[in-house]
Image 1 (spheres, rainbow, N blue to C red):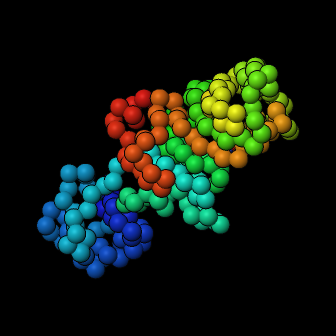
Image 2: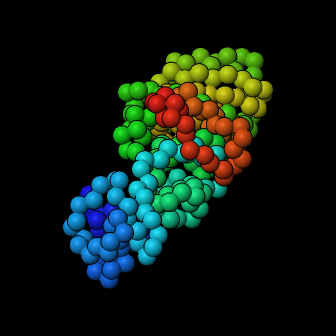
Length: 233
Ligand code: URA
């Protein structure tokens, strides 16, 4: 890759700032000052800027315990962004893999590998996502059996033309349920419970596919995925 691009990839410099830094003799390649922006370099080259050695960051795969009150959006808005909780170089390049609502906590994956993100979220793969929901109204007895059946059959959400894909509902107590869905429609879990006359007071994502939120991660904490976790998708 070009040297100015390498600098922009590995520092906070923009491409034009990188060109300036090069012109000012701030960059060394294998110990020699180099000023040509277009100079081709490979990953094994020893490049420093102002004496600091630089390294390409590569692709990153992160598991975050998203707290409530944090949004998945890439743009800065009303709430802190999930990506700002991840203390990695160039963290702003990470994209949430699917979304969680501001009010939802739990497992959020972030990556700068677009192809991997697509493998996780592609609708045809029907990757299961499991949520724990706290319900405003009790769901037990016959109402529970009816809800299990309705979610298994698929229900028509307000304003939608096709029913939800079969989903698995299990009771964890009168006000607590676990739901696994195989798609990712807007506010899907909240809307599914609304469709059966209930209301989700709190929602937490426990897992995506084989990957379960690490119990050691407190809300707001994150870790990089292990190689086999990345390969699981
Ligand atoms: N379904 C919802 O309603 N909200 C989420 O954050 C995720 C799934």
